Amino acid sequence: MRDGEQIVIMGESKSQLSRKHVDNFLKRLKSLEPAMKGEKFLLMVTHMTRPEVAAYARGKGIKIYYSYEF
Image 1 (cartoon, rainbow, N blue to C red):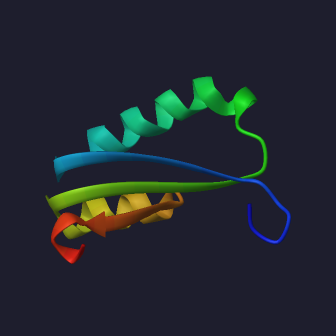
Image 2 (spheres, rainbow, N blue to C red):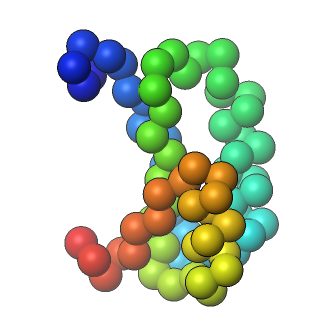
C-alpha cells in the first residue's frame, strides 16, 4: 500500500537478461492481469545485459536492477 492505494509488485530474475526473457515475462503477466488490482510495479533483476535490452525493458515499463547493486 502507498498512500492508501494498493501496489502490485511483480518481478523476475535472470543471470543474463535477454529481450526474449523480457517478452516472456510480459506474456506471463497478461494471464495474471485480471488478478492484479491497483498500480503495477514491474521489475527484473539481472547480473548482466546488453544496453539495448535494458532500454527495451525500460521502454516496456520494467525497472532494471543489477544484482551487484544490492
